Length: 636
Image (cartoon, rainbow, N blue to C red; front, top):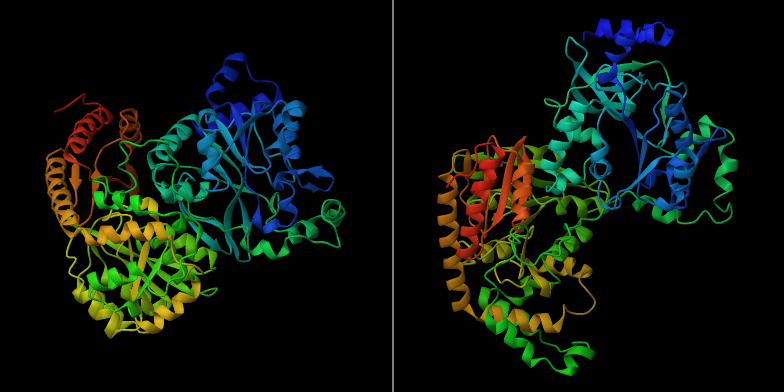
């Protein structure tokens, strides 16, 4: 139906003059429901949002979410889904009062509001997608909508919102940017048609295994897929739709708001003000799983550690359990020093390399500092920098033929412009498995003496592990620190041991953030045996690399599959013309967990290398999954 015909029918329907057949022709455009996202805890409205969800704030005598629900009902929309999370029990009364459907978002405290749509995806049809804290001066909701749209309000002055910067001749949004002035920004009601919802859900499920996706706002996810997710720009007048980001904005709009505020917050004990600054920071979480087999998504060493590590447990005494280790010498430090041919003055030990990284950032970063991080890469770097209110600037790691390579030009250009406190380099790189040449690393160290270069070598051991380069740069330069772990190559993920290598002055500085007592003495005894069993790990490395090369060749023999060369215990794989959601679901049904990444709109898998019998099973099921997702049936 043309838009002009639709508008004519709506006008007649509202006037009560539409014929029955004309009204029936509107049925595909009828709203099925509204989904109201109310799971978050609105950090910028602390301390009030610490005692109740923002959607339950009372503005001008009305509860925000109740006003929104009543406007929906007045428009004829009666199926209303409220997605809850923080203090979900406070929303339960809405079920009795308005008959709403309550859906709990269990991930509200880990991920952004895209997780609320993930939780409510089965309800997404012809749906309004709303936030519980918007205030509509007039009822903007309609029982019939022509196409997917997003309401927009004009702002002459700068504001940190999503501004629509381009539309096509038919009024569909083609470009959105964060922050702007003298333009229209998205706010309030978004409307998804059934077709739009199906496409949105498919893309969301396809990308869901990617940590970065789960941390997106709905708006950012739509921007990522603007080419596929087309929405009309609907211009609303003046301040017809309001979004209150802070308590002060509410006070300005409603002079009586303070009465409500102090009815819930003790005027003489404005609680937790000191925590308000941190309430918007999200900590990094791995995806929980009870599965013990088929775990090819975490890069654990599935060849297992040296048997000598398990034997070390037999030497544990009662004293190892109840006494602090206060001995002058640290045997693990001595063993590492000897193995690496590095003075103990250049080594520090911590509870895993994640904690090494956290201590480096904690000591070196201050508010508003900048960190350069590789993209694609490990999202943990950003989560730790966020806790220090530092800004992360990504630089590219790019596809080059059968491998990935660091874009040294992009890194250098951004380092010159942003003067980062820390530059993160990961080698071998996660998730691509590529390395960076030693001369390029040294060039970066020399060219940016004002920055600390953090070389994350979590996957050290599978390539050139001579240590000659590392030993040279930590003695030659004071602005470099190398991080390593026993979790990957040594296969000891659960004993939580990592270490750092750097100049003595930098080691002493980072040491200010190390634990008061040494890392677990039991864990250190196990780690010592791993370092000493050179022959076991030599054979394990050769076997891992041999299987990785075989698996890479087998993958590259499949049409539309490109496995990149890796120098680690995993392979990064690009899939073309493949439905990621189907591949992921098929593999999980067969008890195989893989990691999905979306880089530049292209689907990638990261697959951990396991013993050959496991990889043969992975290859068999992956071929079937890919064939099924392409609708070609099972192939060999």
